[in-house]
Length: 379
View 1 (cartoon, one colour):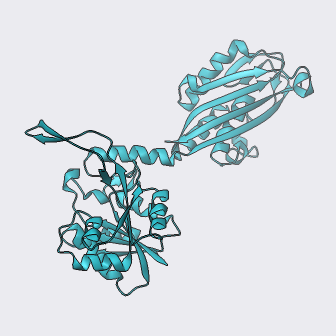
View 2 (cartoon, rainbow, N blue to C red; view 1 turned 90 degrees about the vertical axis):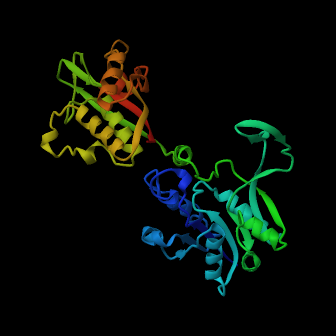
View 3 (tube, rainbow, N blue to C red; view 1 turned 45 degrees about the horizontal axis):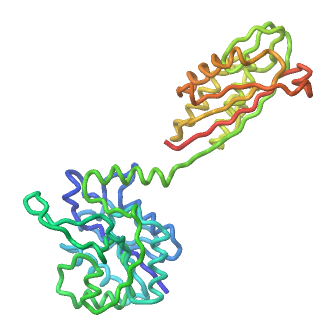
């Protein structure tokens, strides 16, 4: 049973302000219509998507067209555009159509599936939300009366129909309908009300774009967590570098670089969150240019890579495992050093320490280990 989504996007959208028609304006770096298309393309229940465009916009659609997506020219009015799309499907094996505003990019998969399921029980279904606010009549910017809201709904799209029925209804309609439900009812079709979605807003005014971006970001939030672990043995020396702080000590830590075990663990935690390998991949120990290198180079690289990929570091936590030196007196300086390297607030950085109760190599003071965790959120 072939289902086709018709995305109506032939209007000029003058209420949205100056600039391109609203369906072509950028929303998180992509045209509004591309986001709307994605919502339907993600569903295997939708066999084909038909874009209804203004004749002047055909070139803009080229990046969107594919095996499941085609284009038809719209008319001078919305109902004329829908009629053109329906006529282009006449004679095909299309059984069901979903007619949707191209400027509603936040339609959810669950809503689309509810509508298709409703067509198992009738020829038409449409989403709506019950009116909950008080309603007034106005005159000259003054309240002139109230309206009973009982039984009133805010209509949305997509509106779903058995294809032969809605094609016949449009052919019989004189034109000027507000939406396809009006066309269907004029033809005597029963239309079921399906629960709509608050987020399924139609971009109409300039302020709607900011709201849509915020909602899309919330849906797309990508949170990643990575862990890092590192160990360095004690050797000759009179100090150790830990989390960017030089601490006097009777021994040093042995390593290819400055052996800052805490910073190495945190660097690997960030690389891990990015699925980008570890320090050895980016700074091979076989490369002598990193011999004795300061570890802030590695950490700054990891932080920069996260930013370049569109992530921000929301928090990180480093735990140092050692008997000595004592970490508590230096923990705040360590937090400040790590925060400065990563370009984040100090209150997003934690540094703490624990002993292993004299057990293992750290308990025998043969070296220091560090565990780190980092959380990245898509910017």
